[in-house]
Image 1 (tube, rainbow, N blue to C red):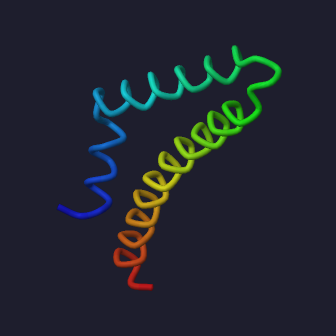
Image 2: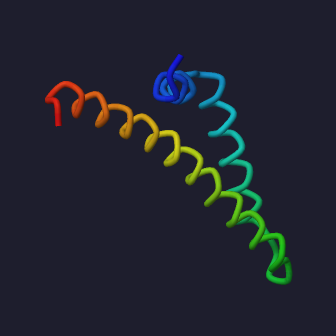
Length: 77
């Protein structure tokens, strides 16, 4: 199975999406409900939220790169 297909499978997997969504929701709630003096906790939540976004973007990039490679083969570029 190609990397592109593996990335598609992950992004289309309901359990994976549920886990990512629940984790993101939990981190966001912790971030929003943190106290004024909980700077380090807020920073960790913010960094973790950014990391979740980067994971999804990386998987999307793998898919798009694979699709572009297929188009290049198709048009013999």
